[in-house]
Every structure is written in structure tokens, then in C-alpha cells.
Length: 268
Image (cartoon, rainbow, N blue to C red; front, side):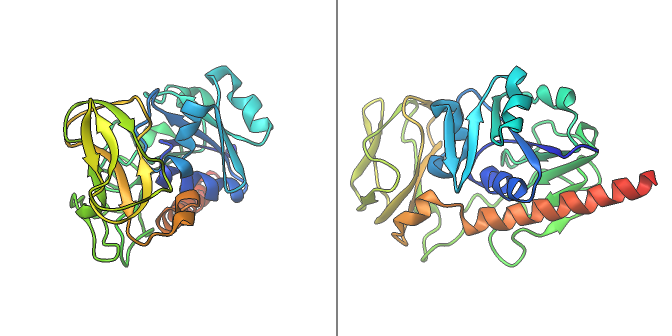
């Protein structure tokens, strides 16, 4: 087996996974959409799709065409490839595939994608469509690996922070084109306008730090998540990998190494 893992998705949780794997000596390739709808962009390798290159806690993610993936890996960076269907996976032949799209459903990942296939969050069943599932719900089981069964079902309610759950989210009041009026890391007060959708104002829902905000110019639908506010008001949290992402990254690393060991043992 080679030492390559492909991660589908480059959002903040996928970035926590990619960072942990790369720090552990595993080579990583990230596949993304042409227009990622990532919210916590300052800590997401998906932002490389827009900016060309980003550095997150000492590790570089770089957008590259498919024919330059191996060159980027040789240079020590994480290649970020626009490949919504994951077509490059069969050509790269990685020993592991991690579906970290966080779509709350399986968008097409199967056990046949690689010797070890991990699903992150709800929508996957270990032993049926993936080899293992990693829990993403906040609480006692965050980061736990399931080798049978599924993660906790999506409740639609984000984790409680300082007594706030759904209040932390910013959602599009109408369909249209997103335009921000504030930036990630800004301190905001409830009622202040942070963005507009075709001229319709999006006010801050609570006081706090603007921790996530959609990329300017992207089309949105009514009710779509476009940002989030952290009531803890810790601006530094906007620029470092979260505790949740690190826990999930640890679970994915555990699952990959455990299952890789089993595959190698089976071949002896």
C-alpha cells in the first residue's frame, strides 16, 4: 500500500482531518467543488480554490490541476483539486479515502473506492457503504470510531455554545448573490448588518465574533447557511483549527491506521 489518502471536501472539519494526517506523515489530496460553500474559510483548505494557496497552522494547501498532484505532493504541500465527482481517486489509487463533505448523507462513496474508506458524520453505515464512521456530534462520543453502524443522526441543531444553538447561525433571507459587509474575525452586535443578498440585509443574530462567512459573489438559496457567530468572542479561534475538528481528525487517523493494519495482516 502507498502512503496516500484522498479527502473528499475541504471545509473546516476536513481541514482538521487533513492537518492531523499530514502531521502524522501521511500524504493527503483534497477534492473540492469549483465553488465551495465553506463558511469557516480562514481555517479551510477549500479556500485555496479561490485564493490559489492557503497556509493553515504551518501546512500549505495549494490549488493544482489534476496533472500536477504528484508534483505538489513532492513539494510537501496538500494539493487541492477541483473534482466534484472524485474522478482522480481511481487514478491516484490511494490506500485510504475519507468522505468529509459533511453533507449529512452519502453522496456516492462506497467501500470499493479504496482499501480503507471512512465516512465522517451521519449518512454512512460502517460495514455497508464504508469501513468505518467517525462521530461528528458534539458531546461524549465526538471523534469516536464506529466499525459497525452509523454516527448520530443529524438533528439540524448545532452544538450549544454559551447557551446558543441555532441562534449562532446566519441564513440567507432570500435567494440571490451573497455580498459580505463584514469580515471573519470582526466583532458584531445583534442587529448589525453583516451581509446582503441581492440588497436584502442579513443582520447579526447575537453578539459575538463573526467566525464564518460565505465567499463573496456566490449564489445562495433561501434558508442556506451563510455564516456563524461565536458568542465566546475569541477572535483567535477564527484562525486556528477547532477542538471539534481536531477530535474528528484523531478519530479518522485511528480508523485509517487500524484498518490499514488489518489489511496488511490479511495479506501476510
